[in-house]
Image 1 (cartoon, rainbow, N blue to C red):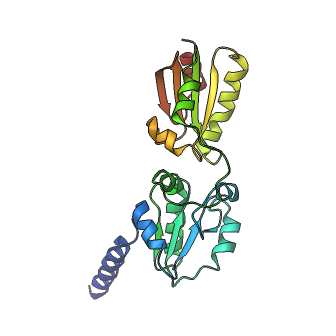
Image 2: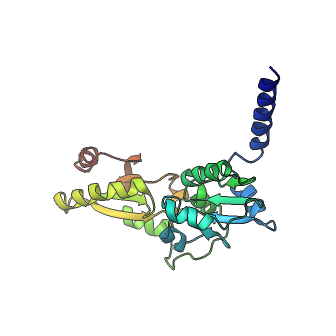
Image 3: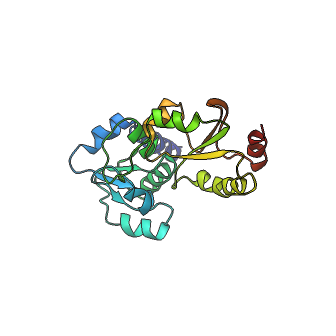
Length: 230
């Protein structure tokens, strides 16, 4: 009985202490946290994603490359706070859990990831010299006669990559029936907010300048083809 009580106390203590830092932080709280001294900031995206823009002073270790990840994080001090982020929050949550399970005492991850960080206007380093598309330019692109399919995505987005063969196939056998406009979520965050796109991939179909269809996530080729055959 005494042993069971001891185990229960330890479990409750662990849960209570975890509640203080197991939940993802908002961009505002994350920004306050990384402004402190003696913290460690880690970007768990790929090197290409990191080179396309990152939070200042962040280290980089690709969570999906386990050999690289373990090799790099062995140099991170377990006694100091670790702040982790990725593109949208999925990988950083897994990485944060890994850190906690491996003896790191204080670990925080960023809710919404780097996409949310940029959307909230927080400072970044290493952004490519690509000029964001203005709403006026977007309206000019989508206001043309006929059908215009807009693809909001990014090179680092797994479901976006899965959609690429579908889009290529449609462009081959439906050439001339519509025009494809690709919007980079890494660059055009302001535009995305202006047209109410918060997740990627998102597809919007315009006909003679008016939105006639919208869908977020993986879309079957037959469904896309049906919409394009209006």
